[in-house]
Amino acid sequence: MTKRKILILGIILLMTLGIFVGCKGNISQTSEVPDELGDVKIGVITTEELAEKINDTKVVVVDIRPESAYIGWQLENEARGGHIKGAVDFPMAWASLVKEEELKGLLEKKGITPEKTVVVYDTKGEESEKMARLLVDMGYENVLNYQDGLAAWAADKSLPMDKLARFEKLVHPEWIDQLIQGKKPSTYEGNEYKIFEVAWGEPTDYTKGHIPGAYYLDTNLLEEEPIWNRVSDEAIEAMLLANGITHDTTVILYGQDTTPAARAASVMLYAGVKDVRILNGGYAAWVNAGFEEETGINVPEAVKSFGLEIPSNQKYIIDLEEAKDVLLDPKAELVSIRSWGEHIGETSGYSYITPKGRIKGDVWGHGGSDAYNMGDFRNVNNTMRNYHEINGFWRDYGITPDKGAYFYCGTGWRASEAFFAAYLMGWENIGVYDGGWYEWSMDEANPIVIGE
Image: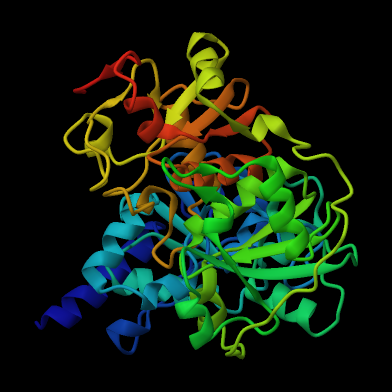
């Protein structure tokens, strides 16, 4: 008897025993003897059955829609934005970005493991079966397709959902495209808007191609040597006015990398700009979405008044003495957003910073592999990592929203990205310690620690 016949007989036996049909837990799985082994029918699960299983630790629910939909954007007229409460994110597009062996690792990091029952869904059940079949082909045996999709779940207000508190501040390419076309996309109140590509130095990449209508913002206008702290409040105001920004201008920031955009966001929020947004995934997200690019340089028209006193949100950026106060406050944490090597003193992280170690009394808030990397906060496509996961690794170090959280790194860029993540999550008592390790380590009287 061939191996194929043995396998088919085994499937028939299992069906007879009731393991595949009417299995325990009221999860409706269906299967059939295939003409070809690769044509196994994917099991399905109903809304009612899924509602009973979302808290089961042996079940993992996977949202395969774009990140923008997961965090709260209603892309297909869903009754509610966000995701099924407890679901992990794994956009279908990620599967094509990595090799199969890397894909397995990414799935496992999300808790999508073969020993669990995996439930996949999209908005209307149009793509989820493809993801389910991909998992089956990879060796996952217990995979179910929620065919009703998020649209059905969102329509029933009794079913739990979750979303990023300030999801609207993390925009997607389609939203910007609608804005450029003169439309009024969701959450946009119709104010004057400005789009900026943010980077350090000359606009080399910007002139090669940028979002149509975008201006260029050099971070040298935001910070200055010797320690790269923010410029004076007067200089911040001059920068804003020269770039046509008032307190009620909607400002959209992006870059070839998100970190400089986050640095600009922290300064603008500190100044008092009310509606600051960042393009999730940066310029690559715009290009990969297939939208048009523009070359040349756009020059903004200056305005005469910002409209508010600067800074209007002074708490968002703190200085050395305030950082020392945070260390003494039992209800606040000074959070190191640096690589583990920097944190324990293996490296200073920078060619121009000699001292190694960390600020005594701080807590580690994750970072990346080095001083120029924010891998712990990014997905495989450089979009922002699932906010539940960021919240989780912060919680492990005692960084929670009921406390103050003031982030620092070497000179403020990485800290700004972590700050903006906390801002998106709706945390209130947050800020950036501007001087960071560079400023702190300049004074030998400031206590430092080396080692784990």
